[in-house]
Length: 151
Image 1 (tube, rainbow, N blue to C red):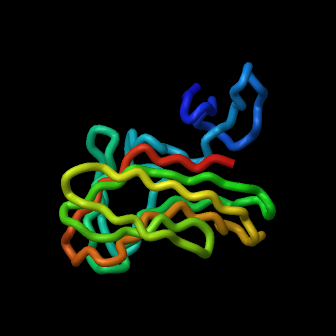
Image 2 (cartoon, one colour):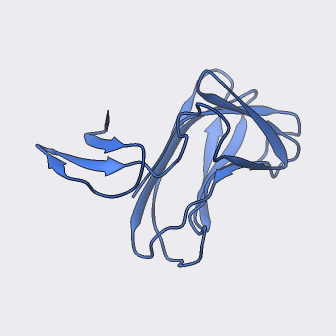
């Protein structure tokens, strides 16, 4: 179990299990969320590797996307977060469902990004966890760790 922001959850599914004292027990949706390997993660217009539980994403274009697909339940509220740092200052997108938020990143430290989203779509893989390059040039790198997707 993981304690975080007053929530306690397990990293295997997204079902509310029980209430423990003042904490609610949730389960994480992201598979391989702490990057013990490359499984369950995909890329578009980039490559990635894993080292010390950090994903290093190398952009081949300005539309580089690092993602994991989920099928959300219409009307459910989802929380998504990650920590990101880049090889140079720029912007990446925290994408969930059809919308995104810009995240200003720099090379000195990790920036935490989080979003809350109510699922409105019923199609398969409608709830993509996506960190997308916005204006970093081809060949630049960004580093992602501590991914979370909670239902």
